[in-house]
Image (cartoon, rainbow, N blue to C red; front, side, top):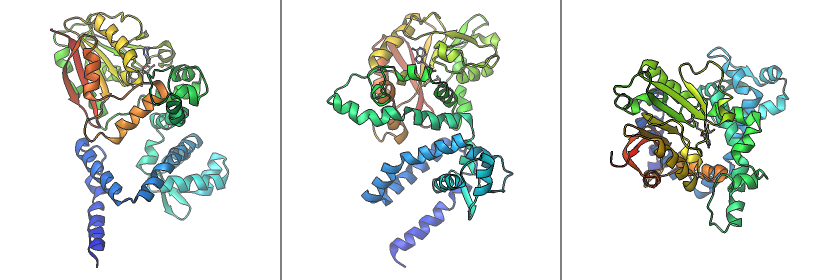
Amino acid sequence: MSTTEKWVQEFEALCSQVPASFASGTEDEQIRIRALRVAEKTVHQLHTPMTFAEAQTWAPLELFGAGVACEMGIFDILAQQRPGSSLSTADIAKALHADPALVARILRLLDAHHMVDQVSLGQYAANAITTDYTQPYRKGNVMTQIGLMPSYFALPAWLRANDYKVLPDASHCGWQVGANTAETFWESMAKDPRLSKYFNDYMAVPRTTQEEDFVSFYDFDTAFADSNADDIIFVDIGGGLGHQAKRIRAAFPPSRGRVILQDLPQVTCKIPVGSLPDIEIMDHDMADPQPIQNARIYYLRGVIHNHADHVAAKFLSRFAAAMGPQSRLLIHEALATDMNPGKDVTRFDLSMLASVGGAQRSVAEQTALLEGVGLEVVGNWSTPREWSIMEARLKGI
Ligand SMILES: C[S@@+](CC[C@H](N)C(=O)[O-])C[C@H]1O[C@@H](n2cnc3c(N)ncnc32)[C@H](O)[C@@H]1O
């Protein structure tokens, strides 16, 4: 046996332990991410330039196949089966009133990309990915990416036309070119109920396996020390449908203070009545002066990255003007590391540039932005998968 053949056998043996070693999917996420990074690097080393290019240049089709399957209901019908049971292509086509030949082609793609399992010839069963892809937030995730595609495919042409010197913002980015519109992505989305729903559903997606533990990544207890029912303890700015505000409310009862959710009216009007008990919902545009003064925490998750530096600086200066000595501004974002940045964060960055003229920043870039509006960064708490909570306070407090 050649040395390489022996190595492959050992590699296979090691890899076969992965399902048992990471069975629940909720083990220490840092360890799992570390293992994933090693595996990705190994896959890269095993590629030739030709197989690398083939994988990369055809990758978008995997997403479009998933999108078709989400909208057809293929994931739903498979996930509804009893554990251990499967369905034939014909069963699935019949239940969905769809063309069997089309269903067979989509299932073949889903199987090849691990989104369903073909358990015997023409018989398919759900796996963990199938089940996940039945969640509204995952369908929203898939369909939002597809909805953003016009800005991505316009990126090369837009940058070329601008001689690779751009000061992007939401009105000057790939979206206008790709969607053939003068509107921002936000304006176009507000007129498109299907895309709006997908986007808002997507915002509820867990950003980390321990998403529910968001409250434990930062010392909210200290920030809310000695608070009473009249204090405003948490303002979730650009809070979407309110999942983060809800987590704070669950951890800190109304006796600890008021929790306020702010967003644009086109988003707040989509919040189901009664879905956010003991949370005050307020229409607010970040471009306007912040009406809530001296809150303990002004919190923004995945909001600042949607905006170019000059726009984000304007919003941040509004928050700084409202902050008092006890106030803290928390920016919860995925930040790029200077060395070995992860794939996800660099993809987010290009997505922000193309679709809304925003940026997924590094620690230094975000710090500079905050310092530029008279704030001082006093800490940065890392959460898994490159997300972190950066705290800023008024300078000299
Ligand atoms: C990427 S979403 C993040 C939502 C939520 N914070 C989360 O983490 O799920 C960005 C949010 O910012 C809101 N937003 C965008 N521009 C805004 C503005 N000028 N004023 C207030 N909110 C705004 C959007 O409506 C959207 O809900």
